[in-house]
Amino acid sequence: MIQTVFDILSIRKDFPILNRKVNGYPLVYLDNAATSQTPQKVIDTIVDYYSNYNANIHRGVHTLSQEATDVYEQARQKIQKHFNAAKSQEIIFTSGTTHGINLVANGFTTLLEKGDEIIVSALEHHSNIVPWQMLCERTGAVLKVIPMNLEGKLVMEEYHKLLSNRTKLVFCNHVSNALGTINPIEKIITAAHNVGAAVLIDGAQAAPHIKADVQKLDVDFYVVSAHKMCGPTGVGMLYGKEEWLNKLPPYQGGGEMIAEVSFEKTTYADLPHKFEAGTPNICGGIAFGAALDYMNAIGFDAIAQYEHELLQYATQELLAIDGLRIYGDTKEKTAVISFNIEGLHPYDIGSILDKLGVAVRTGHHCAQPIMDFYKIPGTVRASFSFYNTKEEVDILVSSVRRAKTMLS
Ligand SMILES: *Cc1c(COP(=O)(O)O)cnc(C)c1O
Image 1 (cartoon, rainbow, N blue to C red):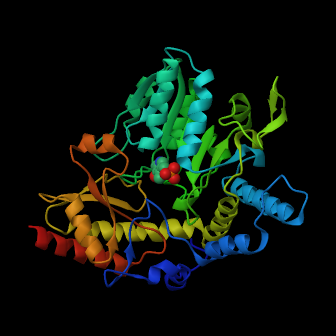
Image 2: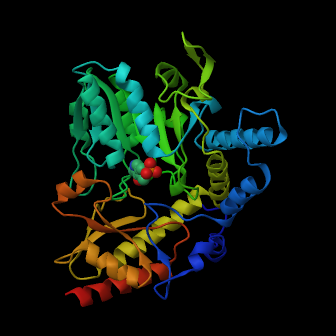
Image 3: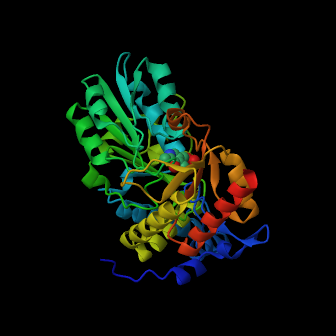
């Protein structure tokens, strides 16, 4: 049961951008899988930082620097608590999901040998494909792909066939950004561990909807971006089990990540600083913490339930349009609808929707292999957040109908 009543009108008041007009129409923002909007509390946190205690962290003896350091480290603890990591040093601040994945992929360069195998899923975002291809080029490891089916789900029997004692790493997203499919990551992690492989889960698309418990999942690495969960761009986190983070070499060299430096030899700082070279996005990290506070105050159960209702309603209404096809129709999905209308190009539909104030994404959604699988150039993707409404679904549907009439 939901403890709090979901008060959508008061929630919408928290987001100043939702008041604006686009091309003369009220904004209907349905591109949440690309980036989410920012609540006033997070905006206030950013203004407060630059107005009152902007300073570099960990360096100065002065008051501002200590204040900034304290609040930044408190944000790390909020993130630790949110994802239930055992230790705060297992939380590495990154610039986002892409950075987190590259940090791990780079670290495995020294741990892999020719002939080792890496498994990725067919449902990946490009940022979870290309770094592994680069790692394979550096090491001679081989990339294997878990295939998908028409429902937009991974074929788990094929995954089990791919696993062997040559498998060293498995990479999969928690939720597909292109289709919204929620992948069975518990099963994926357990099976990988049974052959001794490490697992990295890309949580970028799951984190705004599902609260992941990294200890319960027993996952080795989990990465997210703050900007998809009400935080600012340019900041994210990498969770890594301490034993893994100790095994991996640093990603970048620089200030903050060292213990001692001389021209003969440099020793590295302890976790998490070993992976945090240079001045980080201090304000961004602090605002990430504020975004988690904001979302947790609403509650992830309430968010999931409300978004599911929006998804069901939107799916039903869109499917009533002649010639409209939705890609990925599994029951286990977040509120993402990727669709096309027979004979129309997704870009043309998206352009007309924009003229009517409706923001959707069109194209391959950084997931070209999925588009190749369905033999389409791309889709129109409407992705919902907890601040969207049923009325906005109605506007989407009537705008799609209008686009269809205009284009055919
Ligand atoms: C958005 C996204 C990424 C990339 O996140 P960045 O913030 O651009 O680094 C990776 N994977 C998935 C599933 C995503 O949705």
